[in-house]
Length: 296
Image (cartoon, rainbow, N blue to C red; front, side, top):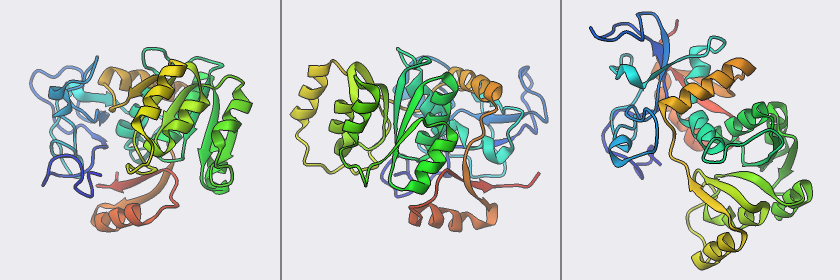
């Protein structure tokens, strides 16, 4: 959406994710030193607690200049350490997709071991959702459009997989697997999959809304959605990235379980146009696309 000019500020430096090395610090900075490997939270002003309009205005690559640059000055408090086992390329995938997935799984009622978690698709947030939910000890159900993508989901920790093209009524399979429905659903489809998600979630379960990859145009009657949510007492929650505090919590789990992000392809800095073309035109990539600004 940002790339196509459908969301965010105009004329800014793109990209919200980024990993790098500290090359200079301010006089009063004590937490970091030159040479530290760090990541910036996507919203540099979101340290903890709920999102606010003021915090939202600090979103890198959305409201202010992003990370597609050789040097970037950032508030010291917006940074977190890169897990030791990750490369810069792997770590650069974490700020947006991984923190969003973590926020979804760790809301007012966090996912716990034994919970059923349904993850839609195999995009960036969804893949991290599978990895993180699996590490927490949940039983993970993943949907996607091809057997190849579902093989990746299985390798990352999905316990059950459903091809939604072969099984259009996938919500019935979820009910068969879970008995009562999923405790948590990472919903990325939008209005065209939401009614199915409501059928697939248990009473008083959670649907965490990330996006609308199945399209924003829908013939679904909004009253049908609201009445379906009401009848099952479903909690519907919009997810908008996460905070530095959540980022740090997530990185502890990533470090302890040695979770490695899925990187589909790495482009060099002089291949930026190729990277965007690949992202916009390829519908078969699985995992994140990375632009390496400088070699280490």
